[in-house]
Amino acid sequence: MQDIVKEMVEAHGDSVYRLALRYTGNRNIAQDITQETFLKAFKRINSFDHDKPAKPWLLKIAGNLCKNYLRDNREIPVDFIEAMEKPDQANPEQLYINKESETELMRAVKNLPDKYREVIMLKHVNELSYSEICEVLGLELSLVKNRLYRGRLMLKDELLKQGGISS
Amino acid sequence: MTGKVCPDYLTIQSVVDNEEEDQAVLEHLDQCSACRKKEEEIRSMVFYANQLSSKERLPADFCDRLSERAVYQPFPALPFALALFAIAFASVYIIDPGYLNWWLTVGITSNIGLFLDTFFELLYFGINTEPVWIILFLATLVLIEVIILSGIKRLEGVIK
Image (cartoon, rainbow over all chains, first blue to last red; front, side):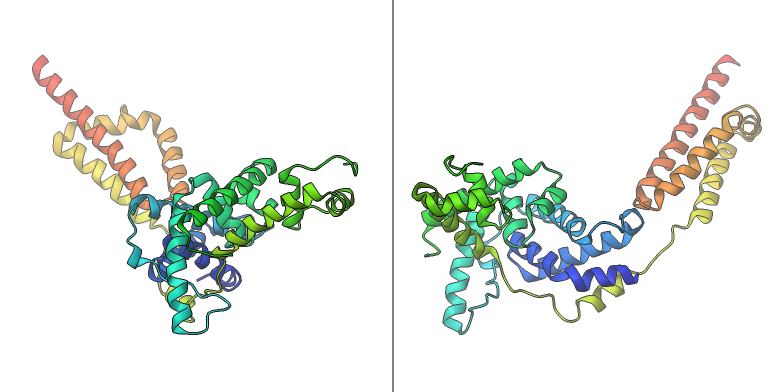
């Protein structure tokens, strides 16, 4: 494997994995998507502009793969969703509560329209700045801000409707 | 932005996300209770959305497993080109050996420069494309040629 792709895995592998995990809710599938992302990057490395940061490029590839996965697997069973590792996770009880909230969270995210979901994911899962989100999605700044606002509002409403996460 | 004009939700959201550093907006938020209420609403939305963040990490052996799959395989341009020419030759020869001469002298060969250029461009294109698409495309071209030549042969038989 080319050294540059190895460096990309070390620098951005976890970020790509978290995005895939949020879209799919399953570690094995997320690892497969992450692998596929880096294999595609490896194949297309000649077309990558080395003066630009790699993270938006990789997340764009990963995002497309995730969307394809969701399109092909519309009905993800609830049991399939795994609890994510959170900073405050301490014991089995907490793990159970997390699993419950994860299910609610996945449902809420799934109910968001795609154009809002992708912005929310990039902002809150990958912690990208506005300008980086613009680069990944090829959108104007004003549109990104707008979608982020509306997406957050919808997500909050969905979660409150389901009562899964308390503030 | 003056201190009296209330910023819109998107501007306040930019402040909450640490993307807006306009001093006038920040000062306004300190002074205006209506805008602070908007800011609290946005912070609440951000709190819910932040539930999406996680500390998950890839397994330690991920890079090794990826390396096993990412073996560089150069596109076999020469064998591929030879195979295609062999198929084209064989297909023409099987239909009628006489057409082989025709094909080499007046048929497609008259535009051979154009075909070669296209062929090599396709090979170059193939570096960044799945080989199966190139093979399918070229195989279609060969098939079209075979059909056309078969048609000509049938037509010639009718005329004779």
